[in-house]
Image (cartoon, rainbow, N blue to C red; front, side, top):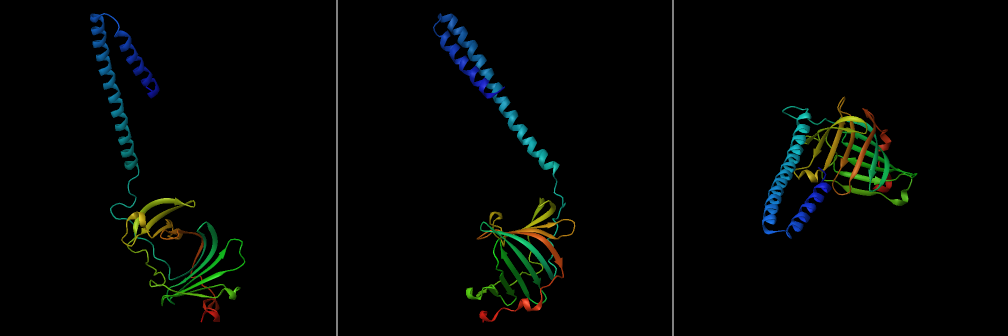
Amino acid sequence: MPFSRRLFLSLLLLLSISICAGGSDDTTMTTRTLLAERSRKWKRSIEREQQRFVDDLDVEEEEKLAAAPAPWGEDPPLPPLWPEKFHAVLVQYRNGSSSLVDLFYDWRRGRNANLIRKQLDSGTVVDLEYSNHTSFYFDRSRPERGCRLVDFPVGILTPDWLSGARYLGVRTINGFECRGWAKGQGRPASEDFVHYWARISDNVPVRWTFRVGEPMEMNVYSFEVGGEMPEEGWQAPSWCF
């Protein structure tokens, strides 16, 4: 029964008690006893309906869990390894703006490059990273902006950088069925460093999101194993030295 109707009937019951209070003593006592009994029955009925509603919620949650058993069985699948060399075109969302990024990864030669073109900007910011923990940031078309040298203690990512990541399960990302992993470096789940999603069919990355500090989402537009940047592209300009 809808709650509004129950409230109306309860008010009507209280009104009846008030009216009957003005009758004879015998009539009043009989009426009050009858109404009190009905009130107790009504209360028990409402309590049963409330408990049944709670029980139904619990059953629904259990049915949902039972209908979606863990797809990995006892042990979750291991996160994928990165190829030792690849070229990926990424769409990056960061701080409310978007950029197109060419990522060149070359593990054997200890280097990684990001060529970042911001939306509606003619320049290209180059981020050259090396395994000696040194990174250069510059724009070849705008030497007046100088060059920024950054020392990263971690260096470039290793091919197994997702090792030990926590499995997130299966989810549809950008229209692709993907498996996901979270890397938290020992922190609580709410403080995960990165969430990484790879297509189930071939482990090609579809998206990864850096969640610490200024969040940055990377959506993979294309992924070419073995793709490389021309050698001259790896040389920082003279104004960086």
